[in-house]
Amino acid sequence: MAQNLKEFYEDVVQHNFCPLWEAGPTTISKEPVTKVVPYLWKWELIKEKLTEAGKLIKPGEKGSDRRVLMLQNPGLADIGWRGSTTQTLTTAIQMIMPGEKAPSHRHSQTALRFIIEGEGAYTVVNGEKVAMDEGDFLLTSSWCWHEHGHDGAEPMFWLDTLDIPFVNAVNAGFFEADERTYQPVEFPENYSIRKYANGMVRPIQDHNAEQKYRSPLANYKWDKTQDALDSLSDFNPNSYDGVCIEYINPNNGGSANEHIGTWMQKLPVGFHSKAHRHVHSTVYHVFRGSGYSIINGTKFEWSKGDVFVVPTWAWHEHVNTSEEPSYLFSINDLPIMELLGFEKEQEHPKGNQEIKDVFQPNILVKSKE
Image (cartoon, rainbow, N blue to C red; front, top):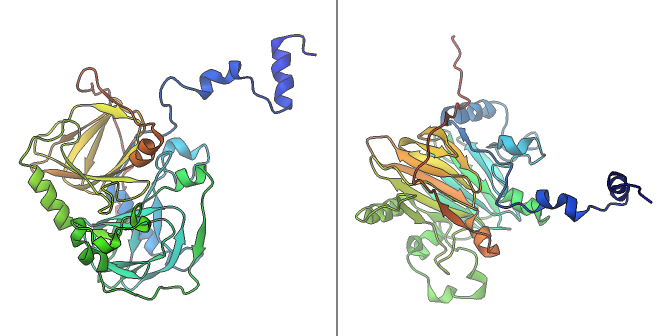
């Protein structure tokens, strides 16, 4: 029998017990605590490193069927969360070269793509071939066969986001390579875009249980997104997010992706948002424009192509410093937090934050040759 509390702790640990009265403060916190840190990746560095990878890695070679650089959050690297950008999301940048084809596969994780730069590439999802153009937002739902190809003349880049950390945390991951290597195209090109009128209609014959949770629309075209933002620009912008829209499932009005929220926001010229924080974490991609965001008192300066992350329960606000509107495409885990009843939001008591530090990003060091 233990003679004192210290001996007791040493004894029960050997039997795989953990006293709640001793561990409680670290297991149940007063507010969200995360290892995720605010961070920003510069587009110039991303593009240069993928270009280097293009000379070394080809789809289908060396055990890799995609040329992708995952955006690793520094706060998660040391605890084994490899390739995680937040505690629930993996965001990455993919490059495909002219003439290349990435083989078909499927997995439990849902995936989405936002086209950053280039033209001539396409994806095939469950037999539907869909063209990719700059500013387009594309979906690949859970367990859908998907592959990519490029018929254009220049390298093409897009942003990928998957719910890999979340699926891994609940041990629900499955993966399968397609024995056919590539899928047969079974539908007319851009079939779902035409059938669903870019998400503005729902054909009655498709109103069934199977379509309730999975968006039938494979691609949300940039020109339609731009039209929606321009229409909303006639009204006062949201205090926190400017002129902001959410991509939705035309069948049920919910999030386009079952697990991942996707928004596009337009920050008007001179816009400076109020600061707030919320439980859901967010990854931002700067589609157009330049400015900065203040995250927990640190200034993160961004420009076209950059990607930055706002962790859960972090104060944040956005400022457009360019002479044109800035456009931010963002990905979040709000659908999961709302489904579980965890989402909360709080306004900053002073409206805006004081800048205490300026983030210094890793940048490309060009050769002197």
